[in-house]
Length: 256
Image (tube, rainbow, N blue to C red; front, side, top):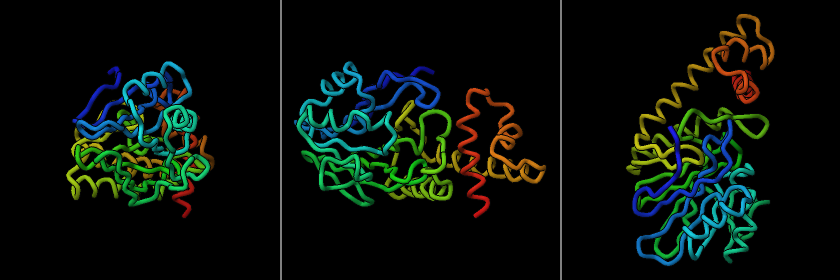
């Protein structure tokens, strides 16, 4: 299935970056959020510093009130400071090194631009600084790389932490019920219209993988590579390096 972005709900539009790959799927999703009828917008994850992409983001965003970052990985954050300077606003992020504002993006923060309120939800695990963003007015949740539109997210050491990631998935699952979230807007891949089902599937998949890793270790696998050769034998070998990073995080989790 090819994903090309577009408008979802009344307040969210995705501008897809031209950086497809094994880790980025169709490319990075840059989200433009705007209250109905408002002048200014919020831009989430401007993405790579490609002039054509940033031109498209600016065209969709118009006047920008603030740039928000879901996490530090460069396919989301690399152009943030330059883009914010270009449109005359600040960058807010959980990672202090990426901010151009004194204000960070911490759990529970409410960012308001021309009537649109976006709530920050700390969801560490994929990275230590990962943040999801709740747009209550649209019953939508931006998940960065914590939940993808296709497949599952990589949790890679040393910045990734599987225990934190599982806690974050459980938190998002509760949020779906408690706040009536009907749509997930991921950092890569298509929009998710069945958030409860997908999050339940993520949790089930992680539990099954952990059992497979336990079994591989019991059978004598002692390194991440040896576990991958057993557990991911049915996966294209081009994905094994990413799988090896995930297994290292799984082994660290099991040791704890």
